[in-house]
Length: 506
Image 1: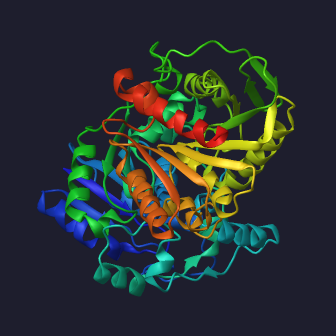
Image 2: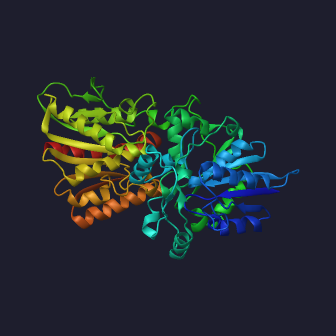
Image 3: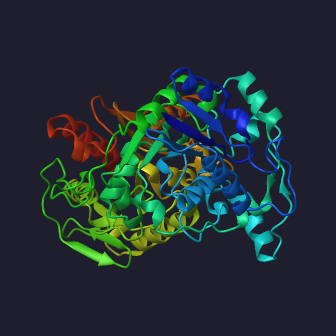
């Protein structure tokens, strides 16, 4: 008999699991949603409530499950709930057979749940309170449908379900977010499954990329005891698709799921595979965090600055400006008679967009100051998650910016990234692009969540009369240059480059 112990996220009590628990029970399993102290009406607070209080709640739920042959405990933590779930699993590692991370990050020893709060402004306010020693009190729950988006995508959650979520939301005790999680090595031995809700911004491909980049934290995710599932929904699958969630949990309990490829298999990861086009060798001129590829003599030339995507772990080696794709694009630009420039910026986490934007601005100024570059004829070309960095340039394009291009970009931040109120929203910014030409390379087999942002951008560009040229790669995937056949990706890539160069030189 498999016993599921379900732990809810921020503001949410046991009731949020009602439909999922019923489906697990109908499949012949036990399912217990944990009432959390000061969150659930049936478990009022007595004294100070912190993370250890909730860990004790979950530990008590584990202890209440009778032991016996064939009784396996699967501990499911959603959102904030993964913190008390992991804390309890660390205290009862012999009793827990699997931990399921439901659309949440990877908590680490010594880090408080506050680090996982997606809203940066709220995170900063709470951190300031912690700095003043204010670890008690309550964090008021969201009151409207729109405010739930600050905590994650509500995709798939109907109006009635959102009404119910809002009506049942309870104030989150401040101490539960500010107290650091304490873990030993014991929990690392417990098998784990990640369930990723792709409409909230993260899928298996993105996690595989983190492993491929050499992120030491992500490396453990490619272990033999770790599996993954995707659900094409938002952050609350227990409300948007409880039947599908129950099915995934049953399969996870059986040890099924996708396993990631370790980084050291001997096969080059996608981002280090060869560029699909034969381009002439052009010497690299390294200046600080920028590399210039200059096409020989001939005076000052226009330049294309290529801005890589991310987030990319700080420890990733080689760094993006040395990846074959970025080098290939820069050399292709040089073959067309303009200067190609690549750079490294510090987009290591979704909280890093401001400093990455500053790095891009500094790189552009460095390129424009080079005597081999025509400072009045510059193009910017963005990739993947770097697409959000295009927004400030669209919102206020300088006179010297003659073209903006993007390949398989993210053009609207996923709700869980905490950037809803930021300036990094190209879908909004394109209305102010004016006469700035925009060239967009669109992958036909893009991840659904990213594809939705591209289509929203295209619609916004059309509504505002922006000068948008679409270059489609019908069978291309995200990162198509090194994933798909050269005969399919090469022609549109060359077409896009020539479109950009024409706008620089015309």
